[in-house]
Picture 1 (cartoon, rainbow, N blue to C red):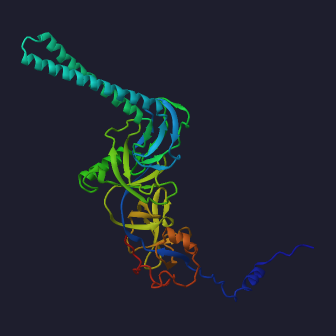
Picture 2 (tube, helix red, strand yellow; picture 1 turned 45 degrees about the vertical axis):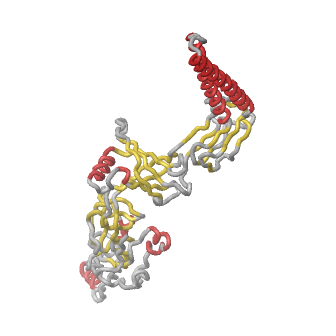
Picture 3 (cartoon, rainbow, N blue to C red; picture 1 turned 30 degrees about the horizontal axis):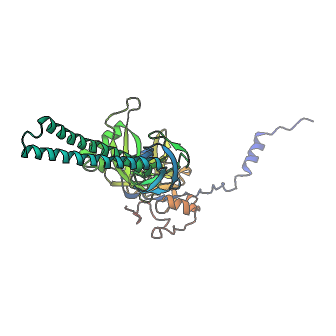
Length: 419
């Protein structure tokens, strides 16, 4: 049996069977829900960041000035000491004996001096009363004996002073106020004058930090100082410091010294800053991160880092206009300020910037914008829900009840901050 082929009439009949049905309706897509915020308006300062090391303002190695056996150690390693505190004692008996002998020799020489003075005076009186009773040579001899006796007293007194110094040096005192390290020599050991290092003391307050600054930055700072924008002199320029465990820069100091020479191998200059350290938190040798301001405070706009995108190296943000449509805005960014990025150019304080949902939109699309205050670092940690807003919730943010989700983004909100 041959297969029956469809005829044109049959095809026409089949095609007309569905002519009475309604066309398929495509469901409308709901606008993407995003979170928008207006930039924060704050006082900001441009600055550069550097790394450095803390250094003691004073550091002293304690060395004995006399040789002898170390007798006593009067401190505990690591303790705070004040200038004048007794730290070490060397056996003083030898030096006490030398001092006593020197004092005795002074007494002998002083007695000889008195005799010489008396003899000279007596013979001068005799010569005056009885001319010719004593020759001129004898008078010269007695005058010379008196001078010799006086010189001998001066020599013996100098020897006594040296012996007294040696005796005093058997006790070693702290020359500065600060913290002392561990003793390098234990009691009972022989220590040599000007050779043995018994311990080290470092001052605590104030404390220095040294770091290298590129020549362009230091020239900019010096120019601002000359113009009076950073103080009247280099020592007035503020520097902010943070330790490894600090998220911010809680310590403020000032520049103390700028090396007049530029290191040609690195193109940098060595800089030193001074910080108060009354609580003793800062210790020599610690790593320090530093922030050096490059001008006076100025008005700045700040947005959260998550609002920024990158397009072939160009930073941009998405702004929602009055018609709820997304607009692409290239921006010029500045420094990071307390977790927020300074925007130098590209937006205004009245713009509503998308802070959550940046990856889900593109320029020109219509969105459902939920207004909230600009998220800061603390908000990001306390309220992670901001990162995942509920779609089509129709609810307004509890932190900005004055503005509803259905309001136009072109309307000004009331959450501008100043610092």
